[in-house]
Length: 223
Image (cartoon, rainbow, N blue to C red; front, side, top):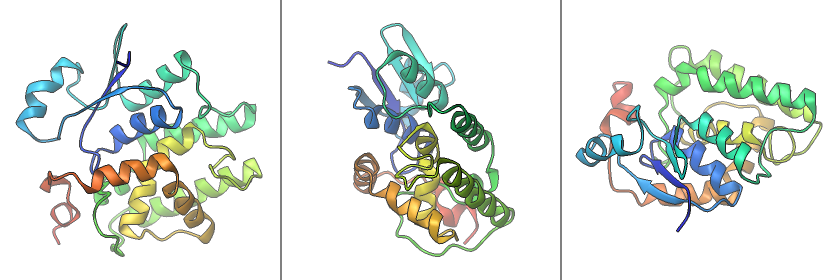
């Protein structure tokens, strides 16, 4: 049995869960997985056992619980051997930290209008209020990161790092909704989608049977 247990929501919908799961998986850190489908009685009955905020993800360790995806990433980075972490170069580290925090607290139009839905057949979604500006900012941010590292990837700063983990839910959104990107940013999306851990998450999402209507694109946007 693993000493770590990660509690997540639906793989199809839970972008916050993806980040924690992806970070552990990309770093080959063993963990047990508990999946509590969002919006269900099971979730309501069980989540308080794992998270004081009643939100996923939560990481249960021998020392107690860690909640919030970024807190989990930082905890694992500090206490377990990791290769997918912060850049060692001080300039790139500063850029990575800034980009991660911008994603963690921003891009609200993209989050609101284009919920993560990994199993939805890709289509060209309309650009809704505020989204066009945020997509342009996302594209510019990714370009700036790639320029700063002077690398061909696979990550935004060369080798895969925490910044790629944090942007992973947006990568899925770009695919699902056909969000308009430059060729260079689209190539990054394609590269990330080909990563084994991302493929594994997408495959697991595809076989989930739950439907959370409140997070479906047509419900949110009235289509």
